[in-house]
Image 1 (cartoon, rainbow, N blue to C red):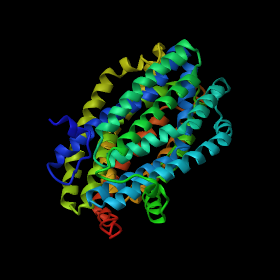
Image 2: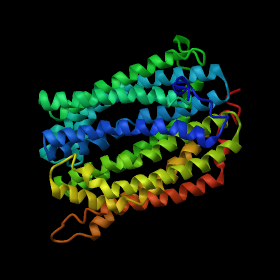
Image 3: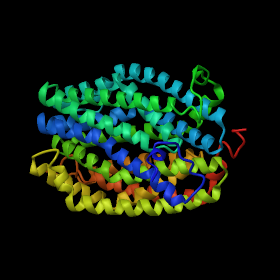
Image 4: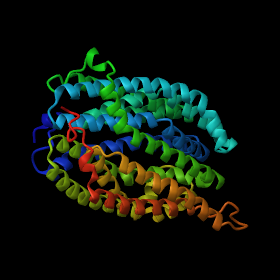
Length: 464
């Protein structure tokens, strides 16, 4: 195998769809595991060196952090779709200006997010009824992450551009380097310096910033494919609006999803520190179980984008079918492994046997949902790659806002007893499983209707 070719942009409009998707998805899968390690190592370090309450603080802060990042989600999605379609259509000028405008939008968004978060963090924490025992840690963790959000933003955007060009390996290598740096700094800041929760946040900021710089240097070396100078960085209404139109639905989806998770976090907080800590552990393990789904979903977004740009709709449908089959198989295998050996992984977060047992009971409820999510992520990825980011948005809004949140509160209310005055904690996960399965069914129907075929920029002449 040509190693050098792994670190170069890849044309996915030719060759075996299965091979192209797998070669792209495997580095993505490894990279997503590494990305998950950021949060996992943070949780392990604070759980082991600071305590279960610190672990709960990191978990309570995560939905708020995700809410404040919605602008970057939108830009990253829009940029990735534009890059893949223009790269597939071989339109150098459009490709160059779409990349430059995405970078400029990221810089503007970073400044906005830093200002908003400075004033919003404390009110949100109090609004959610965050327990007094962990609110100070939550504040420190969030403020450090948000003041250093630029590194995380630019890594995600620039990594997304590389993936849109078909190069998932370079972004992987930079992420692996950053992950090692993050682990070393986590241990140093917490175990040696004694910074506590603030230490893991600072380690993450430094590591993500380093990965962003490496992505930028890589892009600057791809002069044979696109240009990146002052001319390309200058905001142009057409490209800015394309990023916004393509990315806004995904950004809104993430915003609504994060707000829904914050509402669920408020319910979670009512069950006490033990359930909060168990939820953190589950979400970390859940992150690994979801990795194949996210990886193949992103791979199919790039694959579909490039082939739509080249007007190869026959390859899009073939890739969608093959990619979904592979993702389902991989997801099912990983789910079985987690069910059999998940308790071993959970002991990495805490030495409290009761907490591990509680976490495993919750994880068993979610198990089959990971296979359903493989279908959702893959077919949604195809639709997004074609430019239809609206359909996945409405599906996510329906399953999260209309189904998951009300169902969680309803089940909690209906299961109240004198021993459990706020209801049964299982309501959190039964509602989540329900929304996942329903989402897979609706996504399959939406994909089969094929409206995504008419959403492409190149298809509609925008690339002319």
